[in-house]
Figure 1 (cartoon, rainbow, N blue to C red):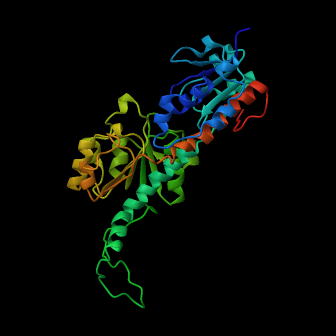
Figure 2 (cartoon, rainbow, N blue to C red):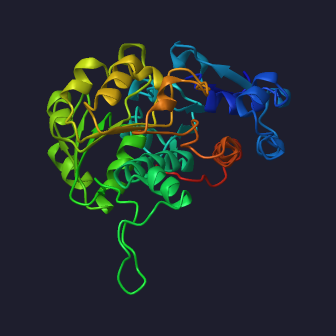
Figure 3 (tube, rainbow, N blue to C red):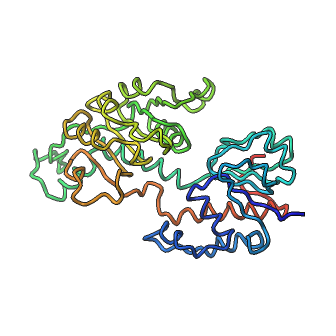
Length: 355
């Protein structure tokens, strides 16, 4: 009998870390570079993979676009990919389909259930943090947080003496707003976009979204969001939050026409990828006041140079690609993933099992 196989469907950097550990390559240079400037302790991952590594005789394989059925896997691991009913039926040794993400995207769950194959969908705290950061940028822009902080530190002269020792808005900052009652437009409704919708609804926002394949009416009702085209969304949203997939066809999808379609009092948020935005168009829109402001955690060039033109704009908040929190936070997610792989080999209980 051939060796048991753990098959990775995609080469996403996060799942690549798990594959490297299973290949006994926890000391790989690219791993150090990926986590830099942090220094991760990969010992818990190595321990979680005990008994199921390449050194233990397990075949660790990357599909690289090949048909998973060619490998007769024991475990299939992926972040983005498809595990069809045909694949499940043909993989006679398959015990576990492990997705990195809380949704069963790409998995024929009913086929897995019928075939006695376990399915685990691992929630990712780093994605929750990214959604929180998008809302943080919205709040900071609407409430002019950085300007307020700076003016208080400068001890600006009060515009009034106040009443009973309480001075209100003494630097006379105008145009302050919040999220309640505002309209959020979510461009791309993947896992982070969905999490942003949930948070926005808790703030009392109306939410519209756009994506290639709209949700069903029942799904929209459950989520609390309604579909619109991209032009329609841009025309009415107070805040536009970008969460589209980082695909070649989406490069520069937010360009001059899109920023021109936004309202002059609207804010743009990007916690997805810098390449999705035409930064020349965004800079011109911000400088001309065609949109009110932007919150950017991701950038066309990273790190963004200190002398960069965006650093001269007062209506922009810039953060250094930290929306997901510390990168070492991935270690908790990956440890659970590896422990689940080992549990599947041993017939033990699985975390986050949905089938």
